[in-house]
Length: 282
Image (cartoon, rainbow, N blue to C red; front, side, top):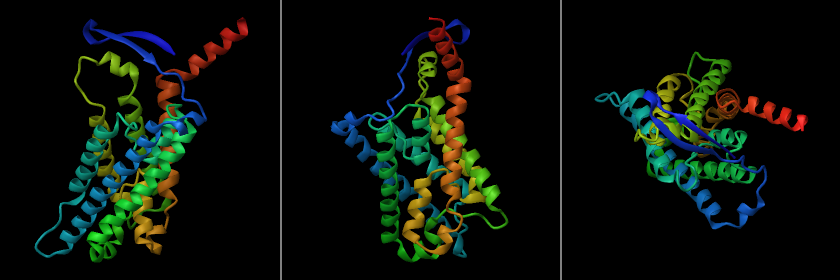
């Protein structure tokens, strides 16, 4: 664990900050703590609610757009729904589970040694199950519209190939996971402790802007659980076409964000080299 002091803008003296030690790769002790299972449950419920609001918004937009008298609320409305919901849910669950609500975020934080393998695996399982249940709730409420509009599933837009879709998912997830790392960085918290900005706010805005840019290309997956839940509940060929993009793209983007933040911006590579040289010299 390292301790440092940062000077803020204009000579403002920020407080000390502590870099938490890396999470163990496998922490079997977590399986014996109620707080761990409470966090897994929080991830399940949060992802269920996220998919319920998000997919219901997508289907509602398509339903209104299909009516002659109303054009729907479009990409902007859908992006606000997803971004706003993430802001609310991350705010509610950050103190319990960290507010991941996305397997790609969990994977990125695992690579950054913020969570153990045990926690990462169970979080991802809970997120996927929550996504299926959230989409199932939407389907039970609006089954005709759910089936008519492909279950709100993420799909490649007409005119875009798999390469373009993959690039969009990688880039969008990179922006999101990079924002998560930056918003939760202990150095930033110490330096900007005088600025009352909540970490969920930039994360919610990141989801909003990425959705604006990516919905016209892929429907804005950037969250494998979101794509998986819709595909499972709709369960037709169209929903599974190119589904791999919505797993591979977000995981690559998350890995890139973790490496960029931890090893380039936070100097993880330099710290490791110094530690190696120090050990070698001794």
